Structures are given as structure tokens and as C-alpha cells.
Image (tube, rainbow, N blue to C red; front, side, top):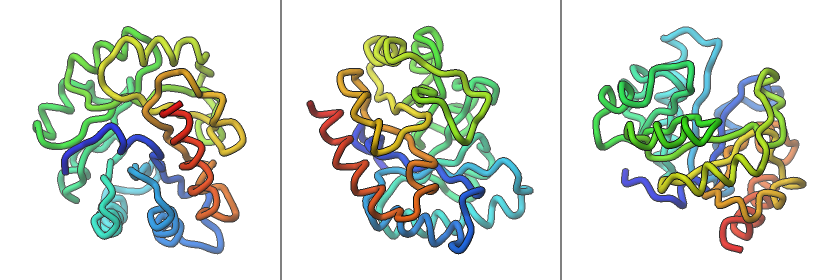
Length: 213
């Protein structure tokens, strides 16, 4: 799948902790049907077998909806399920190693919290960056807040798209206007909502205004 800047517009990141009456599959299907533009499967607590099973299921769903599937951290799982790409953090395999492992055709996302990290990730082959936490984070309590000035500086210093992340919801997303982001990666703002479809549609409408002021 060819990667486009617009794929970063509304980038849904899964979190199993929000499952209750609905399964993760049901929640993801609802999000995809409502218009998310990219999906990252993030599984910190599953063993490799269950992670692969989940990844294969998500591969089917994302193919049906024509949305890129990104696997968080795990290059082997990304390759085995034929995902469109992988996202790595600063404490994971470095971007250059990840690029070598997945080849030139797959998408590589990298977490960047400083301008220096952003420029290095781009030089090492990243296709997009995830930067934050812009409004704190419900899912990563240890994530340090990022100022909007830093986010803007990262966007200005790289040519690849940047997706803001961290506590982004429909009620605060417009504060990101003018930063230069290509979109937002959202966890609880989608999967932590009672009405996932409404959350996705509202976020997407607002993000279109944010990235195309």
C-alpha cells in the first residue's frame, strides 16, 4: 500500500483496556467503518501467539476498509501478518534497523519527542512521526507532556508528516491548529468513548479543519 500524508489524519491506536461489552474486533470495526484513516495495533500484554492471531484479524478488517495497518513495536509480527508497516518508539529497535528489517515498501513510523529525534528518524527512513504527549495521556501515565511550540518545531524541521498524540479528543483537538501536523493519533478519544462512530466522525471533521486551516 502506498503511504499518503492523509493516512495520518485520524490514526486510531488500539487499547484492549477499553473493551467491555464490546470486543476489540467490534470496536475496531466500528472505528474503521466510521472513517479512521490508519490503524495501529498496540498489544503490550499478549504473548506472541495471541498477538499474531489478533494481528491477522486486524489485517482482514483493515484490508476490507482499505486502511493501512501498523503494528506497534513488533517487526516480526508486522511481517508475519503482512501489515502495511510498523511503529517504533525511542526505546525500541532504532529506525534504521527497523527500516532494514521491513524493507523499503512498508510504512515506518517513529516516535519523536524532540527536533533532534525527529530529524534523525527522518534520515533513518521514517515515513511519519508520532509526537506527544500533547495533552497528557490516559494510556501512558509516564508520558511527559509536549508543548505545542515543540510540536510546531518538529513539524517545521522535517518533511515527513507528523501525527500528534496524547490525550486528544474532540473537545481539545482544535487547539492543535497552526502546529503543522498532518493529523492525530488517538486512543481513548476513540476507543474510550461510548459512541465510537460519533467520536470518529466528530474528530475527523475537526481534524480536517486543523490540518487545512
